[in-house]
Image (tube, rainbow, N blue to C red; front, side, top):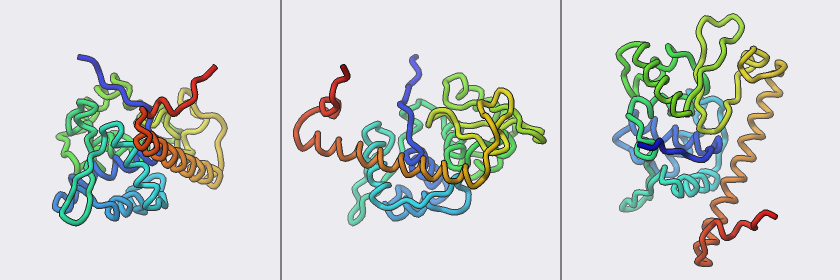
Length: 229
């Protein structure tokens, strides 16, 4: 059986997916989520790394991009349109793996112990070896990676690869085998993350605009992109 492969997701797409997965487990009575609830979940100040300040239009554009990948579905309610994720089916991944991916998308790199604790409301793992087993399976499929230990840390951290190479914590910069270089200041890293989120939002808005225009013109979205010489 072939393993489903996704294109690299933007930081906003990962945030929206992570929130939908999280809320499906933690607030099932109000799931699927309305746009207002989804935006609030994306902008939470707790259990989020990095924190974001997203607008309704940015989240809507991100939803359009995820719908094109069949990762999000729109559910028509009596009065309010709501949204639900479809990551497990697209990746053919079990619920335990989806829970781990969601926590990594929402909270950044974590140790096995942290993952077990932070995913408890999404999926209850029997022990640490169970968490490691699912991480190893997802690593084989290229969806997560085990990072080198940071100075002074006893345990290695894991990161997801759905957005490409992970943005490492400051403490990980310069660690051999971690892919980092010189240590950067916290303020500099925060500025980089903010700029990355802003650019990702602009790209998501442009993608959604292209898809809408292509639909109105009756042409495939890829036909709107000029061919390279």
